[in-house]
Length: 235
Image 1: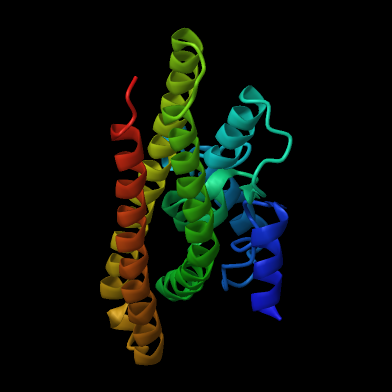
Image 2: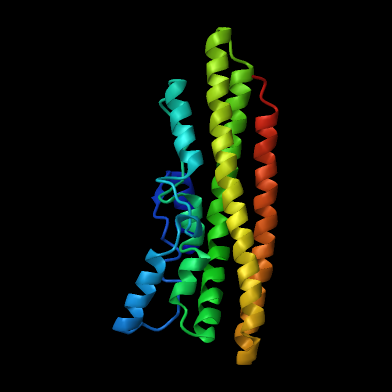
């Protein structure tokens, strides 16, 4: 059933809420009134730099819609757009925001296992979107390379495509860095919670950490492919 739902989303051009996978990732018990107030205050006091940077929708979706409008296409390739952008979709709350919610080491261990599981589940859709973005940018670059438009018009289109590619690269690089930060924090959590002597949970977290490492390698490879498209543009 899950596979059929994912297939439908990837072909239907859906908009997915950025919190779809991660709204229930925490397994911590409900906080008391005083605890909830302290947690909320802690999150409110975090500087913007320590929160997940989100967009209204994923950059590839917005850039592709703009490009299709520019060239007069009425039949754009189906898009998978993430409300909150891919960072909001894949990561949910930032490390600092989650730290505010952890009252004990056990809560941190449980929370990071759940968060890592949701991240690793979310990679499938993020990678599918990145593959669509790459194919779309490659097609756009090829179309402009063969364009018969006047030099001025063609240059304008190339500059707009180059700008869209740079924005996409910036977003994907930010996602990669945030994922690396998550990888390091989960390694740190694994070490600091060994004193709990809960080997089963430690093993679960280690399994998820290894899966995250694989995801990071895929993100790096996808970023490099997109960078190659940008580098091959002739402005």
